[in-house]
Image (cartoon, rainbow, N blue to C red; front, side, top):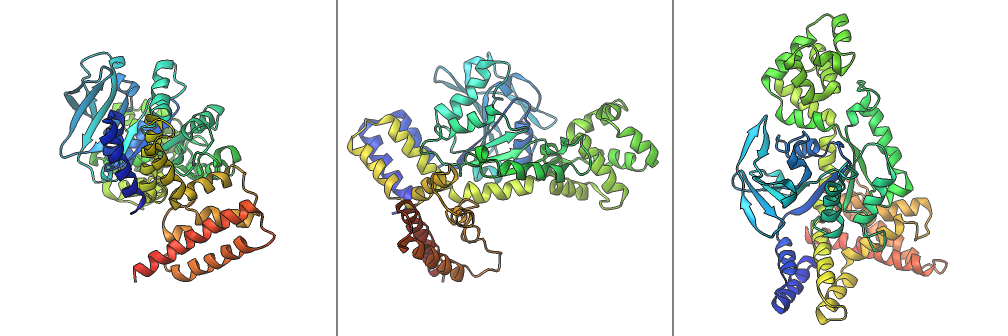
Length: 465
């Protein structure tokens, strides 16, 4: 019986014994897509990033009252909005679409609404439910508290995408709280995004290259790495525009590209100057940003793209959103079962009396499942509690799934690499370390776990033929 099946069985017993509503919800949650919260400071670009990930303009990006409410975006057969109120009731709410975004009629003050759920027919939302949260450290303490309560206190998210602009103490504190104060936590369910990356360096055409260097520096910051081991630079506006670019917007950009170069330089000197040239250009600026206008103008002028479809593809490529989707697939979706089981067991710990047979069952699963052993080791490794040489540290991190849960990611192999040979070599290496007389106890324990990981990769490979 695999980890998720064992967790389901334990929750079924707990629900039958207690009829606890939180446990009923936790059991139902195991069969739902992974819940991924998007969090960050006010104006970090959370709603824009959500739109880019889904590939559709859904979340409003202005400062409307709905942006003060935790909003779930989930797959469904048709567009629908449900408002869950703080008194425990729920009601279907009417909505309109304005410039693509879903505009919801709350029908009451926002502080009476616990959360909103927007159902959308979307293949991307079948893999994970995305949850847009209010900005932390906003002017309203109540609004900020909603995000802290939802993500950290209630444990409603299995994983988090955290948006960074400049690394502040508040960012570190939020991630520490998400990981349970740093004790017994794991960093594999957090992905960092260097947001609004196109604005770095004044929206110059090399902005994304500069942003990549900043993101690389963040990943070597010891404070951040133990909480959020990967940071991806993303231009959310570009990603959203790439998915939704309209023919009229391409024509407007083509008109700019056809102007004399001196006029283009003058027009694109600042965002204000471009916006002052007419309402259509102002709206275009809100859609793609100054960097997007500059990049599009260059691509069209140089003949790299000749139509709206080509420009849309180019904007997507430059935005970093494809790389982020790859990271989410490797780091979160690839270990969805263990992350969902972890959330379920945390709920069991919260709702059951310590020492009860059911609580003991949860601890037995947690102690015996190799997936949890890997998470604990990764946490020890990244928090500096496990002393290793740098090359061994990097290899162990990778083999334990720090760069992704797939066999090739764990073994550091290219697409055509020999998984079986690499897994046998890793098994032999870490088995020797586990048995070496000069290895201390902690290293021997960790090496045995890594050896078991390599054995698991080999077993899976043999099953595939």
